[in-house]
Length: 276
Image 1: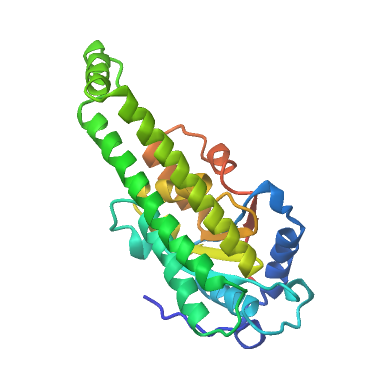
Image 2: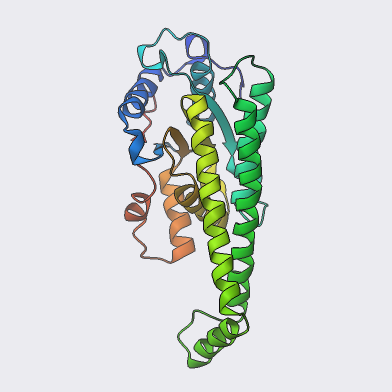
């Protein structure tokens, strides 16, 4: 595997002159209205085109004290780099993502003085809310896996009977209580991330190597981001080979699935990276 320069900068390492491409992306991000929720952009390029190095240069430019590029000026922000492929051994996709975000931001905060008034309190709230939503998410997955193991969701009458049996085995009050607790945890998580992103100016989360992941992990990552992170001042930048990711969608949902239409649910913009 090629070694990536973690300290790559546009001024010294932009061999393919891609700063112009990133400036276009930053214009889209700067024009994005926060009330729409998270801004999600995919950078589409085939394997071997230097997507990871591009992300590293982008991150380092955003986190500089001063940038000479107009689109980066006053772009006070914090960045998280997340390699999805390194985490797809996990049984769920939400846990490693949340802990990557919390771990990265905590490390950056410890190296920076005066980063956002009350940032440590916001970080603690994020940690707590993240743990709560992970617990809720894993409980949901456990129930879902139990239902799948019993064949629930199929067309047979026996399957329908099994579903009723599973529901009857739980008190309605308990089912309602669990649902309300889940809603409460989601709301707490949403507030914690909203406060944290506000303290960052913008929170940029760069997702790399998703197209190399197992289909289940890749799809769950996209859907977790859609359902849990559609939050103002959060920006997701994916770097993928869309043709490979389309195969992932077809593997997960079946041949004939409209992968292009599926991606429209997740990405506000898909930008095709030129070779040079």
